[in-house]
Image (cartoon, rainbow, N blue to C red; front, side, top):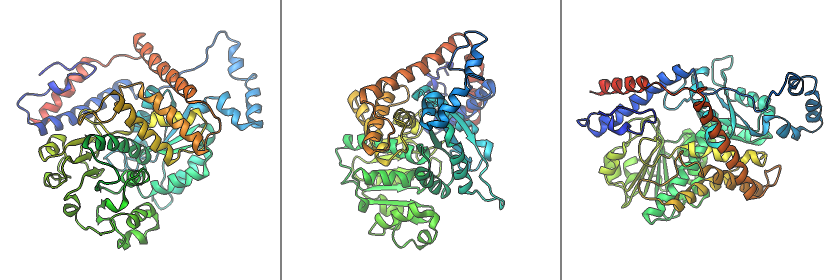
Length: 484
Protein backbone atom coordinates (compact mmCIF):
# COMPACT_ATOMS: atom_id res chain seq x y z
CA UNK A 1 0.00 0.00 0.00
CA UNK A 2 1.45 3.35 -1.04
CA UNK A 3 1.31 6.51 1.02
CA UNK A 4 -1.52 8.77 -0.14
CA UNK A 5 -0.37 12.21 -1.25
CA UNK A 6 -2.54 15.28 -0.77
CA UNK A 7 -3.33 15.41 -4.50
CA UNK A 8 -4.76 11.85 -4.32
CA UNK A 9 -2.84 10.85 -7.45
CA UNK A 10 -1.92 7.47 -5.98
CA UNK A 11 -5.42 6.56 -4.82
CA UNK A 12 -5.71 3.49 -7.05
CA UNK A 13 -2.49 2.11 -5.56
CA UNK A 14 -3.54 2.66 -1.98
CA UNK A 15 -5.53 -0.54 -1.58
CA UNK A 16 -4.18 -4.07 -1.01
CA UNK A 17 -3.36 -5.95 -4.20
CA UNK A 18 -5.51 -8.80 -2.90
CA UNK A 19 -8.66 -6.65 -3.18
CA UNK A 20 -11.11 -7.67 -5.90
CA UNK A 21 -12.43 -4.90 -8.23
CA UNK A 22 -15.69 -4.59 -6.30
CA UNK A 23 -13.74 -4.26 -3.03
CA UNK A 24 -11.57 -1.49 -4.49
CA UNK A 25 -14.67 0.35 -5.73
CA UNK A 26 -16.37 0.08 -2.35
CA UNK A 27 -13.22 1.12 -0.49
CA UNK A 28 -12.84 4.20 -2.72
CA UNK A 29 -16.37 5.31 -1.90
CA UNK A 30 -15.86 4.83 1.83
CA UNK A 31 -12.47 6.59 1.72
CA UNK A 32 -13.88 9.63 -0.08
CA UNK A 33 -16.80 9.92 2.33
CA UNK A 34 -14.54 9.65 5.38
CA UNK A 35 -12.03 12.11 3.95
CA UNK A 36 -14.78 14.54 3.01
CA UNK A 37 -16.14 14.52 6.56
CA UNK A 38 -12.66 15.07 8.03
CA UNK A 39 -11.72 17.79 5.54
CA UNK A 40 -14.94 19.73 6.07
CA UNK A 41 -14.37 19.63 9.82
CA UNK A 42 -10.78 20.80 9.35
CA UNK A 43 -11.69 23.75 7.10
CA UNK A 44 -15.14 24.40 8.62
CA UNK A 45 -16.70 24.46 5.17
CA UNK A 46 -15.08 25.44 1.90
CA UNK A 47 -16.35 28.91 0.95
CA UNK A 48 -15.63 32.35 2.41
CA UNK A 49 -16.26 35.95 1.38
CA UNK A 50 -13.39 38.35 0.64
CA UNK A 51 -13.38 41.93 -0.70
CA UNK A 52 -12.77 42.63 -4.39
CA UNK A 53 -11.90 46.30 -3.82
CA UNK A 54 -8.99 47.79 -1.82
CA UNK A 55 -8.94 49.82 1.38
CA UNK A 56 -6.20 52.34 0.53
CA UNK A 57 -6.91 54.56 3.54
CA UNK A 58 -9.53 55.18 6.20
CA UNK A 59 -11.62 57.54 4.03
CA UNK A 60 -12.18 54.77 1.47
CA UNK A 61 -14.72 53.31 3.89
CA UNK A 62 -16.77 56.41 3.06
CA UNK A 63 -16.50 55.50 -0.63
CA UNK A 64 -17.45 51.85 -0.29
CA UNK A 65 -20.12 52.60 2.30
CA UNK A 66 -21.86 55.78 3.45
CA UNK A 67 -22.06 58.59 2.40
CA UNK A 68 -20.55 57.91 -1.03
CA UNK A 69 -22.52 54.77 -1.81
CA UNK A 70 -25.77 56.75 -1.81
CA UNK A 71 -25.00 57.66 -5.43
CA UNK A 72 -24.95 53.95 -6.30
CA UNK A 73 -28.35 53.43 -4.68
CA UNK A 74 -30.04 56.24 -6.56
CA UNK A 75 -28.44 55.27 -9.86
CA UNK A 76 -29.76 51.70 -9.54
CA UNK A 77 -33.14 53.10 -8.48
CA UNK A 78 -33.35 55.02 -11.73
CA UNK A 79 -31.79 52.28 -13.91
CA UNK A 80 -32.11 48.77 -12.51
CA UNK A 81 -29.81 47.30 -15.17
CA UNK A 82 -26.98 49.39 -13.74
CA UNK A 83 -27.03 47.00 -10.75
CA UNK A 84 -25.18 44.52 -12.95
CA UNK A 85 -22.15 46.84 -13.15
CA UNK A 86 -22.36 48.87 -9.92
CA UNK A 87 -22.53 45.76 -7.72
CA UNK A 88 -21.35 42.18 -7.90
CA UNK A 89 -24.78 41.14 -9.18
CA UNK A 90 -23.55 40.58 -12.73
CA UNK A 91 -21.25 37.76 -11.61
CA UNK A 92 -23.20 36.46 -8.63
CA UNK A 93 -25.27 33.25 -8.47
CA UNK A 94 -27.66 32.00 -5.79
CA UNK A 95 -27.46 28.24 -5.27
CA UNK A 96 -30.95 27.48 -3.96
CA UNK A 97 -32.14 24.17 -2.51
CA UNK A 98 -34.70 22.80 -0.08
CA UNK A 99 -32.40 19.76 0.35
CA UNK A 100 -35.23 17.29 -0.32
CA UNK A 101 -33.15 15.15 -2.69
CA UNK A 102 -29.49 15.50 -1.76
CA UNK A 103 -27.39 13.25 -4.02
CA UNK A 104 -28.44 9.69 -3.20
CA UNK A 105 -29.32 10.49 0.41
CA UNK A 106 -32.86 11.83 -0.01
CA UNK A 107 -34.36 14.51 2.23
CA UNK A 108 -31.60 15.77 4.54
CA UNK A 109 -33.50 18.67 6.10
CA UNK A 110 -33.02 22.31 5.04
CA UNK A 111 -29.46 22.61 6.37
CA UNK A 112 -28.46 19.16 5.13
CA UNK A 113 -27.76 20.43 1.65
CA UNK A 114 -25.18 23.02 2.71
CA UNK A 115 -22.22 20.80 1.92
CA UNK A 116 -23.42 20.23 -1.64
CA UNK A 117 -24.48 23.84 -2.22
CA UNK A 118 -21.17 25.18 -0.91
CA UNK A 119 -19.49 22.65 -3.20
CA UNK A 120 -21.45 24.09 -6.11
CA UNK A 121 -20.30 27.59 -5.17
CA UNK A 122 -16.72 26.31 -4.84
CA UNK A 123 -16.75 24.86 -8.36
CA UNK A 124 -18.40 27.95 -9.82
CA UNK A 125 -15.60 30.12 -8.48
CA UNK A 126 -12.67 27.88 -9.37
CA UNK A 127 -13.92 26.58 -12.72
CA UNK A 128 -16.08 29.47 -13.92
CA UNK A 129 -14.75 32.59 -12.18
CA UNK A 130 -18.24 33.11 -10.71
CA UNK A 131 -19.14 34.18 -7.17
CA UNK A 132 -21.95 32.15 -5.60
CA UNK A 133 -23.66 31.67 -2.25
CA UNK A 134 -25.49 28.64 -0.83
CA UNK A 135 -29.11 29.36 0.15
CA UNK A 136 -30.74 26.33 1.77
CA UNK A 137 -34.38 26.95 2.60
CA UNK A 138 -37.31 25.25 4.34
CA UNK A 139 -40.02 24.56 1.76
CA UNK A 140 -42.52 22.93 4.12
CA UNK A 141 -45.97 24.48 4.47
CA UNK A 142 -48.35 24.44 7.45
CA UNK A 143 -49.26 20.81 6.68
CA UNK A 144 -45.62 19.71 6.80
CA UNK A 145 -45.55 19.12 3.02
CA UNK A 146 -42.75 20.32 0.74
CA UNK A 147 -44.41 23.15 -1.15
CA UNK A 148 -42.98 24.21 -4.54
CA UNK A 149 -44.76 27.55 -4.29
CA UNK A 150 -42.64 28.46 -1.25
CA UNK A 151 -39.46 27.93 -3.29
CA UNK A 152 -40.91 29.93 -6.17
CA UNK A 153 -41.83 32.80 -3.87
CA UNK A 154 -38.39 32.80 -2.22
CA UNK A 155 -36.50 32.91 -5.52
CA UNK A 156 -38.73 35.63 -6.96
CA UNK A 157 -38.13 37.73 -3.85
CA UNK A 158 -34.35 37.15 -3.83
CA UNK A 159 -33.67 37.46 -7.57
CA UNK A 160 -32.86 41.18 -7.40
CA UNK A 161 -29.53 40.47 -5.70
CA UNK A 162 -28.28 37.95 -8.27
CA UNK A 163 -27.38 37.55 -11.91
CA UNK A 164 -28.64 33.96 -12.02
CA UNK A 165 -30.13 31.24 -9.82
CA UNK A 166 -28.93 27.63 -9.72
CA UNK A 167 -31.61 25.27 -8.37
CA UNK A 168 -30.29 22.10 -6.80
CA UNK A 169 -31.46 18.92 -5.06
CA UNK A 170 -35.20 19.62 -5.14
CA UNK A 171 -37.30 16.44 -5.22
CA UNK A 172 -39.70 15.64 -8.00
CA UNK A 173 -42.37 16.47 -8.96
CA UNK A 174 -41.81 19.85 -7.26
CA UNK A 175 -38.62 20.48 -9.25
CA UNK A 176 -40.53 20.55 -12.55
CA UNK A 177 -42.96 23.26 -11.47
CA UNK A 178 -40.31 25.30 -9.68
CA UNK A 179 -38.08 25.44 -12.75
CA UNK A 180 -40.76 26.01 -15.36
CA UNK A 181 -42.50 28.79 -13.41
CA UNK A 182 -39.30 30.59 -12.45
CA UNK A 183 -37.85 30.38 -15.98
CA UNK A 184 -40.85 32.35 -17.21
CA UNK A 185 -41.49 34.70 -14.28
CA UNK A 186 -37.96 35.72 -13.27
CA UNK A 187 -35.96 38.37 -15.08
CA UNK A 188 -32.70 36.43 -14.67
CA UNK A 189 -31.69 32.89 -15.68
CA UNK A 190 -33.00 30.14 -13.41
CA UNK A 191 -31.14 26.90 -14.03
CA UNK A 192 -31.86 23.48 -12.52
CA UNK A 193 -28.50 21.78 -12.59
CA UNK A 194 -29.72 18.31 -11.60
CA UNK A 195 -31.96 18.39 -14.66
CA UNK A 196 -30.54 20.72 -17.32
CA UNK A 197 -26.90 20.44 -16.26
CA UNK A 198 -26.88 16.67 -16.10
CA UNK A 199 -28.76 16.51 -19.40
CA UNK A 200 -26.27 18.83 -21.11
CA UNK A 201 -23.19 16.85 -20.07
CA UNK A 202 -24.88 13.51 -20.75
CA UNK A 203 -25.72 14.67 -24.26
CA UNK A 204 -22.09 15.74 -24.74
CA UNK A 205 -20.89 12.30 -23.70
CA UNK A 206 -23.47 10.60 -25.90
CA UNK A 207 -22.45 12.64 -28.94
CA UNK A 208 -18.84 11.47 -28.69
CA UNK A 209 -19.69 7.91 -27.64
CA UNK A 210 -21.83 7.55 -30.75
CA UNK A 211 -19.01 8.94 -32.90
CA UNK A 212 -16.67 6.26 -31.55
CA UNK A 213 -19.29 3.56 -32.02
CA UNK A 214 -19.99 4.71 -35.59
CA UNK A 215 -23.68 5.31 -34.91
CA UNK A 216 -26.10 8.23 -35.46
CA UNK A 217 -28.30 9.67 -32.75
CA UNK A 218 -31.32 9.47 -35.05
CA UNK A 219 -30.83 5.71 -35.56
CA UNK A 220 -30.05 4.34 -32.11
CA UNK A 221 -32.38 2.62 -29.67
CA UNK A 222 -32.07 4.27 -26.25
CA UNK A 223 -33.25 2.98 -22.87
CA UNK A 224 -33.49 5.45 -19.99
CA UNK A 225 -33.62 3.77 -16.57
CA UNK A 226 -35.09 6.17 -14.03
CA UNK A 227 -37.58 8.95 -14.77
CA UNK A 228 -36.59 11.74 -12.43
CA UNK A 229 -35.67 15.32 -13.26
CA UNK A 230 -32.34 14.30 -14.82
CA UNK A 231 -33.49 11.55 -17.16
CA UNK A 232 -36.68 13.29 -18.27
CA UNK A 233 -34.62 16.34 -19.23
CA UNK A 234 -31.97 14.15 -20.87
CA UNK A 235 -34.69 12.60 -23.01
CA UNK A 236 -36.00 16.02 -23.98
CA UNK A 237 -32.58 17.30 -25.04
CA UNK A 238 -31.76 14.10 -26.95
CA UNK A 239 -35.02 14.37 -28.88
CA UNK A 240 -34.47 18.08 -29.55
CA UNK A 241 -30.97 17.29 -30.83
CA UNK A 242 -32.15 14.65 -33.29
CA UNK A 243 -32.95 11.51 -31.32
CA UNK A 244 -35.99 9.54 -32.47
CA UNK A 245 -38.61 9.43 -29.68
CA UNK A 246 -40.07 6.26 -31.22
CA UNK A 247 -36.79 4.51 -30.40
CA UNK A 248 -36.69 5.67 -26.78
CA UNK A 249 -38.05 3.66 -23.83
CA UNK A 250 -38.00 5.11 -20.31
CA UNK A 251 -38.65 3.36 -17.01
CA UNK A 252 -39.75 4.65 -13.63
CA UNK A 253 -40.30 2.64 -10.45
CA UNK A 254 -43.63 1.30 -11.75
CA UNK A 255 -42.52 0.24 -15.22
CA UNK A 256 -42.13 1.70 -18.68
CA UNK A 257 -43.57 5.02 -19.77
CA UNK A 258 -46.17 4.86 -22.54
CA UNK A 259 -49.55 6.35 -23.47
CA UNK A 260 -51.50 3.84 -21.34
CA UNK A 261 -49.91 5.05 -18.08
CA UNK A 262 -53.12 6.45 -16.61
CA UNK A 263 -51.44 6.93 -13.21
CA UNK A 264 -49.04 9.50 -14.67
CA UNK A 265 -51.72 11.20 -16.76
CA UNK A 266 -53.95 11.57 -13.71
CA UNK A 267 -51.32 13.44 -11.68
CA UNK A 268 -50.89 16.89 -13.20
CA UNK A 269 -47.67 17.45 -11.23
CA UNK A 270 -45.91 14.89 -13.45
CA UNK A 271 -46.64 16.70 -16.70
CA UNK A 272 -43.04 16.32 -17.90
CA UNK A 273 -43.26 12.54 -17.56
CA UNK A 274 -46.64 12.51 -19.30
CA UNK A 275 -45.16 14.38 -22.26
CA UNK A 276 -42.71 11.49 -22.66
CA UNK A 277 -45.49 8.94 -22.25
CA UNK A 278 -47.16 10.52 -25.26
CA UNK A 279 -44.08 10.74 -27.48
CA UNK A 280 -41.86 7.74 -26.64
CA UNK A 281 -42.27 3.95 -26.63
CA UNK A 282 -45.09 3.69 -29.19
CA UNK A 283 -44.84 -0.13 -29.07
CA UNK A 284 -45.56 0.00 -25.32
CA UNK A 285 -42.66 -2.25 -24.38
CA UNK A 286 -43.35 -3.34 -20.80
CA UNK A 287 -40.20 -4.88 -19.32
CA UNK A 288 -36.64 -3.69 -18.96
CA UNK A 289 -35.42 -7.04 -20.32
CA UNK A 290 -37.37 -6.55 -23.55
CA UNK A 291 -36.27 -2.93 -23.87
CA UNK A 292 -32.59 -3.75 -23.34
CA UNK A 293 -32.57 -6.47 -25.99
CA UNK A 294 -30.77 -4.91 -28.94
CA UNK A 295 -30.56 -1.46 -27.35
CA UNK A 296 -27.62 0.71 -28.41
CA UNK A 297 -27.61 3.00 -25.38
CA UNK A 298 -28.53 2.73 -21.70
CA UNK A 299 -28.70 5.93 -19.68
CA UNK A 300 -29.35 5.14 -16.04
CA UNK A 301 -29.97 7.70 -13.32
CA UNK A 302 -31.72 5.46 -10.86
CA UNK A 303 -31.13 3.84 -7.49
CA UNK A 304 -27.46 3.90 -6.40
CA UNK A 305 -25.94 0.45 -6.07
CA UNK A 306 -23.65 -1.82 -8.08
CA UNK A 307 -26.35 -4.34 -9.09
CA UNK A 308 -29.24 -2.03 -9.95
CA UNK A 309 -28.35 -2.62 -13.61
CA UNK A 310 -27.85 -6.33 -14.26
CA UNK A 311 -25.00 -7.74 -16.32
CA UNK A 312 -27.46 -9.86 -18.30
CA UNK A 313 -29.23 -6.70 -19.45
CA UNK A 314 -25.96 -5.35 -20.83
CA UNK A 315 -25.16 -8.69 -22.51
CA UNK A 316 -28.39 -8.44 -24.51
CA UNK A 317 -27.57 -5.01 -25.93
CA UNK A 318 -26.45 -4.31 -29.50
CA UNK A 319 -22.85 -4.45 -30.67
CA UNK A 320 -20.70 -1.56 -29.45
CA UNK A 321 -23.22 -0.75 -26.73
CA UNK A 322 -22.97 2.41 -24.62
CA UNK A 323 -23.77 2.34 -20.89
CA UNK A 324 -24.09 5.47 -18.77
CA UNK A 325 -24.53 4.42 -15.11
CA UNK A 326 -24.60 7.78 -13.41
CA UNK A 327 -26.24 7.35 -10.00
CA UNK A 328 -24.33 8.97 -7.16
CA UNK A 329 -22.47 8.14 -5.06
CA UNK A 330 -22.40 4.53 -6.35
CA UNK A 331 -23.14 3.72 -10.04
CA UNK A 332 -25.88 1.24 -10.88
CA UNK A 333 -23.25 -1.09 -12.34
CA UNK A 334 -19.50 -0.78 -11.92
CA UNK A 335 -17.57 -0.12 -15.14
CA UNK A 336 -15.58 -3.35 -14.93
CA UNK A 337 -18.84 -5.35 -14.66
CA UNK A 338 -20.42 -3.56 -17.61
CA UNK A 339 -17.29 -4.13 -19.68
CA UNK A 340 -17.27 -7.82 -18.74
CA UNK A 341 -20.85 -7.98 -20.06
CA UNK A 342 -19.77 -6.54 -23.42
CA UNK A 343 -20.26 -2.78 -23.15
CA UNK A 344 -18.08 -0.80 -25.57
CA UNK A 345 -18.17 2.49 -23.65
CA UNK A 346 -19.06 2.93 -19.97
CA UNK A 347 -19.53 6.24 -18.19
CA UNK A 348 -20.37 7.09 -14.59
CA UNK A 349 -20.81 10.23 -12.52
CA UNK A 350 -17.60 9.64 -10.58
CA UNK A 351 -14.16 11.06 -11.20
CA UNK A 352 -12.32 7.96 -10.00
CA UNK A 353 -13.55 5.97 -13.03
CA UNK A 354 -12.99 6.75 -16.73
CA UNK A 355 -15.59 8.90 -18.51
CA UNK A 356 -16.99 11.00 -15.70
CA UNK A 357 -20.28 12.36 -17.03
CA UNK A 358 -20.88 14.94 -14.36
CA UNK A 359 -22.49 18.37 -14.53
CA UNK A 360 -19.35 19.91 -13.01
CA UNK A 361 -18.00 20.44 -16.54
CA UNK A 362 -21.28 22.04 -17.60
CA UNK A 363 -22.71 24.57 -15.19
CA UNK A 364 -19.59 26.75 -14.60
CA UNK A 365 -19.27 27.52 -18.32
CA UNK A 366 -23.00 27.69 -18.99
CA UNK A 367 -23.73 30.11 -16.17
CA UNK A 368 -20.65 32.18 -17.04
CA UNK A 369 -21.87 32.50 -20.63
CA UNK A 370 -25.34 33.52 -19.50
CA UNK A 371 -23.98 36.07 -17.01
CA UNK A 372 -21.62 37.73 -19.49
CA UNK A 373 -24.51 38.73 -21.79
CA UNK A 374 -26.91 39.30 -18.87
CA UNK A 375 -29.27 36.68 -20.24
CA UNK A 376 -32.87 36.65 -19.04
CA UNK A 377 -33.07 32.86 -19.17
CA UNK A 378 -31.14 29.76 -20.22
CA UNK A 379 -32.91 28.12 -23.13
CA UNK A 380 -32.75 24.46 -24.12
CA UNK A 381 -30.83 25.63 -27.19
CA UNK A 382 -28.18 27.12 -24.90
CA UNK A 383 -27.85 23.82 -23.04
CA UNK A 384 -27.54 21.93 -26.34
CA UNK A 385 -24.96 24.46 -27.57
CA UNK A 386 -22.96 23.76 -24.40
CA UNK A 387 -23.20 20.01 -25.01
CA UNK A 388 -21.80 20.35 -28.53
CA UNK A 389 -19.13 22.75 -27.26
CA UNK A 390 -17.97 20.16 -24.73
CA UNK A 391 -18.09 17.34 -27.28
CA UNK A 392 -16.21 19.37 -29.89
CA UNK A 393 -13.52 20.38 -27.41
CA UNK A 394 -12.94 16.76 -26.43
CA UNK A 395 -12.88 15.58 -30.02
CA UNK A 396 -10.28 18.18 -30.99
CA UNK A 397 -7.91 17.09 -28.24
CA UNK A 398 -8.66 13.41 -28.90
CA UNK A 399 -11.29 10.95 -27.71
CA UNK A 400 -11.30 7.20 -27.13
CA UNK A 401 -13.64 4.73 -25.39
CA UNK A 402 -12.17 5.66 -22.00
CA UNK A 403 -12.11 9.42 -22.60
CA UNK A 404 -15.26 10.83 -24.23
CA UNK A 405 -15.69 14.19 -22.46
CA UNK A 406 -13.43 16.84 -20.94
CA UNK A 407 -12.67 16.76 -17.24
CA UNK A 408 -12.50 19.49 -14.61
CA UNK A 409 -8.71 19.73 -14.93
CA UNK A 410 -8.98 20.99 -18.50
CA UNK A 411 -9.29 24.66 -17.66
CA UNK A 412 -9.47 25.82 -21.28
CA UNK A 413 -12.79 24.06 -21.89
CA UNK A 414 -14.75 26.47 -19.70
CA UNK A 415 -14.03 29.74 -21.58
CA UNK A 416 -14.92 27.99 -24.85
CA UNK A 417 -18.16 26.66 -23.40
CA UNK A 418 -19.03 30.05 -21.90
CA UNK A 419 -18.42 31.83 -25.21
CA UNK A 420 -20.56 29.34 -27.15
CA UNK A 421 -23.40 29.67 -24.65
CA UNK A 422 -23.19 33.47 -24.76
CA UNK A 423 -23.45 33.43 -28.55
CA UNK A 424 -26.47 31.11 -28.41
CA UNK A 425 -28.15 33.41 -25.88
CA UNK A 426 -27.73 36.31 -28.30
CA UNK A 427 -29.07 34.15 -31.14
CA UNK A 428 -32.08 33.10 -29.04
CA UNK A 429 -32.89 36.71 -28.20
CA UNK A 430 -32.54 36.38 -24.42
CA UNK A 431 -29.35 38.48 -23.98
CA UNK A 432 -29.54 42.01 -22.61
CA UNK A 433 -26.19 42.97 -24.13
CA UNK A 434 -24.35 41.81 -27.24
CA UNK A 435 -20.64 41.01 -27.33
CA UNK A 436 -18.52 39.14 -29.82
CA UNK A 437 -17.42 35.57 -29.28
CA UNK A 438 -13.83 36.76 -28.97
CA UNK A 439 -14.84 39.21 -26.22
CA UNK A 440 -16.80 36.53 -24.39
CA UNK A 441 -13.93 34.04 -24.55
CA UNK A 442 -11.38 36.62 -23.37
CA UNK A 443 -13.49 37.74 -20.40
CA UNK A 444 -14.27 34.19 -19.30
CA UNK A 445 -10.64 33.16 -19.62
CA UNK A 446 -9.48 36.20 -17.63
CA UNK A 447 -11.99 35.68 -14.80
CA UNK A 448 -11.31 31.95 -14.51
CA UNK A 449 -7.54 32.46 -14.52
CA UNK A 450 -7.87 35.13 -11.83
CA UNK A 451 -9.99 32.87 -9.61
CA UNK A 452 -7.49 30.04 -9.85
CA UNK A 453 -4.52 32.34 -9.28
CA UNK A 454 -6.16 33.94 -6.25
CA UNK A 455 -6.84 30.53 -4.72
CA UNK A 456 -3.26 29.43 -5.31
CA UNK A 457 -1.91 32.69 -3.83
CA UNK A 458 -3.96 32.11 -0.68
CA UNK A 459 -2.50 28.61 -0.43
CA UNK A 460 1.04 29.91 -1.02
CA UNK A 461 0.58 32.60 1.66
CA UNK A 462 -0.87 30.00 4.06
CA UNK A 463 -4.28 31.70 4.28
CA UNK A 464 -5.56 28.34 3.03
CA UNK A 465 -3.70 25.49 4.68
CA UNK A 466 -2.79 22.18 3.09
CA UNK A 467 -4.74 19.21 4.48
CA UNK A 468 -2.64 17.22 6.97
CA UNK A 469 -1.25 13.96 5.59
CA UNK A 470 -2.53 12.06 8.61
CA UNK A 471 -6.09 12.94 7.62
CA UNK A 472 -5.70 11.09 4.32
CA UNK A 473 -3.90 8.13 5.85
CA UNK A 474 -6.55 7.72 8.55
CA UNK A 475 -9.31 7.77 5.91
CA UNK A 476 -7.65 5.14 3.72
CA UNK A 477 -6.86 2.86 6.65
CA UNK A 478 -10.44 3.15 7.89
CA UNK A 479 -11.83 2.31 4.43
CA UNK A 480 -9.59 -0.75 4.08
CA UNK A 481 -10.64 -1.94 7.53
CA UNK A 482 -14.32 -1.60 6.63
CA UNK A 483 -13.96 -3.61 3.42
CA UNK A 484 -11.53 -6.29 4.60
